[in-house]
Length: 461
Image (cartoon, rainbow, N blue to C red; front, side, top):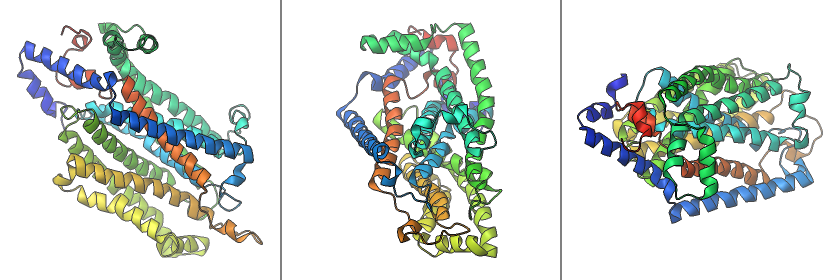
């Protein structure tokens, strides 16, 4: 799609100056409306997330008090629900690089109204990816030792370095394009409490919308766009190496890096589609998050499902053809055994069926594509669970004379509560962010319609 293919560009050129002014003002009012008022449904949603998060904090307190024995993890399944959740969060965090970097650099214009949604999903995902690793540690008070005494030969240290770096870059990638919006909130939302206006003032960094500021901001964004793509690919590749460098059936694969990256882009894209649908409905953004965006994101999801299907075929076909030793036992458990219902559900509802359904344009309408994306996200989470848990229970050399319950794994209520709290935490960050800052980028959307950048900071224009 060419840069000027977005329908808003041609439409805007047909308007008079007065109509353009009204158009700009209307967008500002619509986008800022959720910041001015939170309805009863929004308050109940935030209260629900806070309750789930606090309950998870209580469960974590019990874990800290009594140790990891309160979980179902033992010598067999030493990685369980926490690590599954970590891999899922790292996966969805890649979407910021995909939507805001890849599409920006390849000159697609339709992505502009959804960039901020992708970026806040990326930031919240990587924050809780780091936190859930600390939760998984038996001695979280020693987390600083990873930085002060870590051995560079260890893949865990590689992961610590890349996660920390990606977190910083993702925050900058969210923050720099947000500067004009923060300044506009500072100048417009004068009815807000003093502490909130103080935050806007400090975060705006003295933004006035001068030509020099716009030039520096766009240059900074361009640099981060280039840097964050290899970094995003690296974070999930290194996470894959955590598994691939561990001698276990199902993990001993050179395919794991691209396999993880493909799955991450698929899951992240589905998360953005769901968020687009929710924000569009809740904040009345139908004019800015249009059916065009759902149609394009649906096409992108089809493409990513097909790529992920290719890597899945590579990952399972070769060992299944040989069916040797521990690999064969694991695959039998996945294909026809205890994990077969979950395994085949993930393959069908998380990859095959979405790829087929989304070939039809009617399925790429807002509601159908959001439902399909929800199925993809749920399947993506369980896919990470299947990557971790069954493999831990099928070591090359089984331990002798151990309790029978060590050979199975089902998470305890404490694990479920903590993981639920982490998911609620991600949603809470996204929700609170959307109540403090515009969830649709005003300047990127208007720039796509041919408006001079300096005009966007002038309330009179």
